[in-house]
Length: 88
Length: 337
Image (cartoon, rainbow over all chains, first blue to last red; front, side):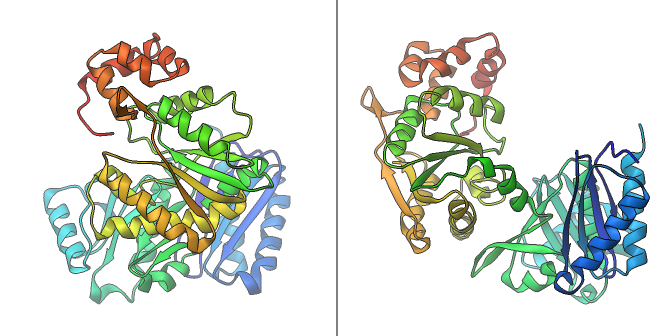
């Protein structure tokens, strides 16, 4: 998947997250979370998993999380990537 | 459902809700959103560029998800407008609420705090890390609307007293000369000073975020609060990153807001280990040089006077074909900035 534009997905609701995707030469992932201390590594692992599955080579991913569960993270990240890869 | 507040009735309701929450209506916004409960406005929130403002939820609705919905929509619209980070100036009692939405505290005053969402400051510093220099460095924050011999003198004098001088050019476009022109004229005007580093102040020094009253021109408690937040942000976030221990500013004979700001720099900065140093302004024809004076002279088409106030680099631009639209704009412009 080729990231061609800046997009956003998700909401600011509790148990949800906002995902921001921007085109970039390499992969970089910034995570802000209300449960960052406990779960940052798990959120990151999930984001990396989706990036690999979607075969994204370069993108700047920013997450602000309010305690989302892993399937919500997966869905929001994939939605954002698909939007960011859409042509036109 | 979150809706755009547009009609006179919407705006009156917004005014009332804000007043009930001890906030003022501020007509300077890009989006103003609200959530109705039947006929009653239950929540309001606005966005002006990167700044979220006028956020208020009716007292009986504060346990629900209205703020979630409001922030989601404000940020979605802000992203569409090209912003990827957002800030809010709010009461200290709201720190926990905004923290729970991943806003980080940037500066605080007993009456107001500055919080940011999206890591904008972090990215700003990261993007400028190639400008970090060891040593005892100084800083000036300048608008340069446009660049004059006065600015040149301030920068040259300051640069001679430090290892490296950072010149932060105010990003905010509320002046006659747009940012890219102001920046370029500063760059050309100090090109021969080899210990001067130029950068864009972004939202983090004298912007609508840290310093709205600079542009509003009124002096009251709010101004003092904003100046404190601005200086704390500078002193605790920008200065340590760039090893800045001195901040320079010129004597201000005309503008009361700027003069108060200078006085506060001298008073507040030392608590963070930064020296505030005032430099006496340069004069031409027994009157200090100011960008305002240049703009007035331009308006009168008194180019001989302009020539004495600005370096050749600025003069060339002012008289160039490229400067033509600005000359026209100046002739019709009556504002102070």
